[in-house]
Length: 484
Image 1 (cartoon, rainbow, N blue to C red):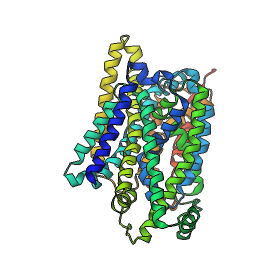
Image 2 (cartoon, one colour; image 1 turned 180 degrees about the horizontal axis):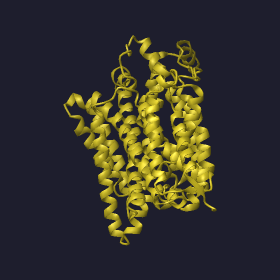
Image 3 (cartoon, rainbow, N blue to C red; image 1 turned 90 degrees about the horizontal axis):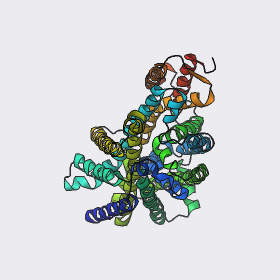
Image 4 (cartoon, rainbow, N blue to C red; image 1 turned 30 degrees about the vertical axis):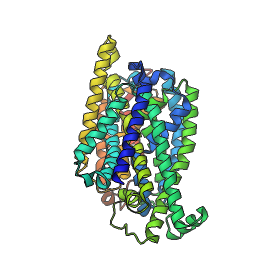
């Protein structure tokens, strides 16, 4: 079976390079950064599903049902509110200003320091967040496939990152938009097929499956203990602001939207994407519950298995060869769809926000060489983080990622909110960098010691909101009216 799985992986990679060959013909810097603003909205909407879900959703969300039941769906409900804010507030702003990097807005609204601060926080957050998402894919494939062949993890990681680097190197975001469509298809196929295979084994109707899940207590959506990290109001409001920050203020996700032909098309894309995403997340939770039922019905002990490994453990060892092959294709699709857009978005942010290549270099050739070099450096950093993190992985990765996002996207949330909803500017050019570093640092220590300081209270997704509010508050303290 291992050779069959590897064969399907080779076919999958060949399909990606076929898309690269088609989409990178006559590609230039505009193609790489903006896709020449010609992407069909429905292709962007469909492809963004895979990019948004990633390998973390694919494995951590189903596995986490064992400990948090369906309470993650509160976050998903919050997503809807966040996407509405993006559709009616952020997208019109980005299209009005004709932005390539969304952090150019901070430079226009405040100054160069704000521009570079916003970009740096995105770069740090995305670099670590996407590297950890890709790590999860490599981690699973290493355990269930490449360890059997005595292939070291660093080599596995290097080959996969090299593949992503090569197929995004020339076509950039144009290639990513179309590749994500393929990857989303494979990922959703894996989800649906796994549900069908397990349901046949359980010999239950959909209603019967729900009743069995309910009897086991897995269908709990709303946690009512306000001190718990997954208290339902924390989940909903956390999901809302996570969406605004990690999608609306994220160059990776917005760069794909900005390849649409018009604002109207981008808004149609986001409406369609939101509706589909809500349904798909529900299916991932359902699949997680079904995996637990399957394990219990077949006497499989999963009590000692980390939550990120429950789904692959069942898929590889119990559901048969076909399910294992489908799982591999799905998990690679989920991982690649997250990483490829990140390479392009990080390269764009470094080139436009930090290096300002259009101002610095008048020659198209120099801009091109700079972009090539930045792309390669991003790939090396990405690979380094994956290899380092391979020595540390003891929690559901989705919680680790959201903890990182709460600290790094908080300053972006506060900065953009202050720019949009006030008519004030800073008294000093150093205020924004200092506040953006100080507040997340304080939030980190507050979160770490909250149970001692706050009578057992545990921060969840609401840490992002607190972080953003504190940034907004301190900016307000050290600001002045623009009209004075």
